Image (tube, rainbow, N blue to C red; front, side, top):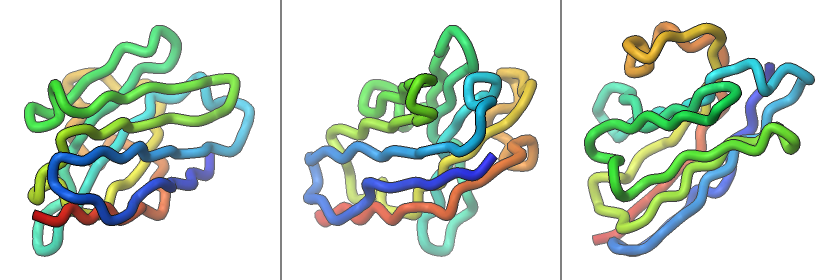
Length: 125
């Protein structure tokens, strides 16, 4: 599957952005979808994920209550709505897809099989 992320940009602290990730292929609904991010000089970290069929979301602690992940299987697209953005949310956000990933492994970047090119989010303080 090929992933194309979009929607990044420059936003003031407290503002919102919605990221989108369009996936190719006919099997989108069989993949767990996720978002990771990488800030300058830091390791890539898990942001959120959503299960294949019932759309169960999982969030990193910093994303809980501010970010919402959703998916539209008819459009082969996963979204990340980010509200109340903070300076420390700045980074490159990557869309990812994986098959048969257990919830205990979502935060591990090595279990995800497919990655998009990333979209840059810059939050000004």
